[in-house]
Length: 236
Image (cartoon, rainbow, N blue to C red; front, side, top):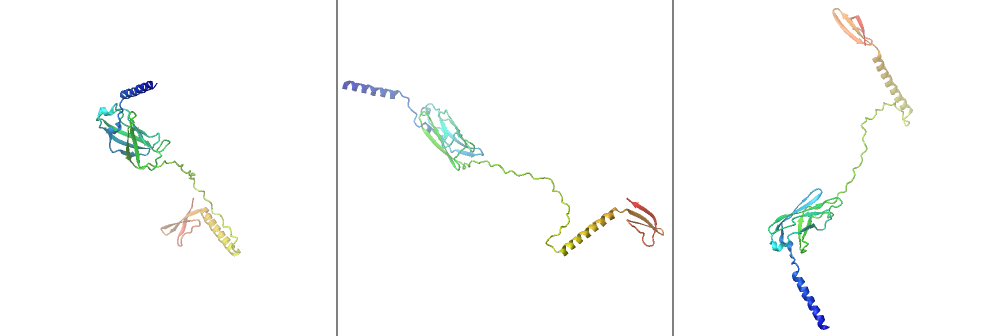
């Protein structure tokens, strides 16, 4: 019984050793083969763009298959997108570019943040590399506020109100009221006289003295002293 148990354990150990020897070797730390230059950034009205130049310094043996690099932005929503070299070989180079939307449903919520971290990793050896880019502060989400409605302004000129007669003030004395009424009547009579004078016919006289002629016009014209009227014309 004991001999049989020992034999089974020995066979299991041999099997495990054989399996380990035939398993593919992982390329540990492949992301360390990428040299990342100083990243630059640009903050626009609708997105934040980050770019970084990468260069491959490892040998092809160290890189293994050389494909499968994944780029992502740490702490951002699904709206952030990154691209960069996927298949790389020794001495190759490229640019990592990440775009982070600002505002909207998938916009960044890291309001006021002045730096962003980009993660680079490879799924076949799970090695990871991080780069940090500094930039302008991410602005707060702007909420549109409807403009106040201004009532239309009338372009019609206000109607002129005719002069109304003076209404006596009840707080005035009788003597003051009588005086105001007299002044009003005097003004009305004056206006009537002006209108009547305009309605009266106008005449033109031709006056003569010796060889000298003189013309006089008016509603009731008269020749000057020493002149004699020789002609009278009604003016329209």
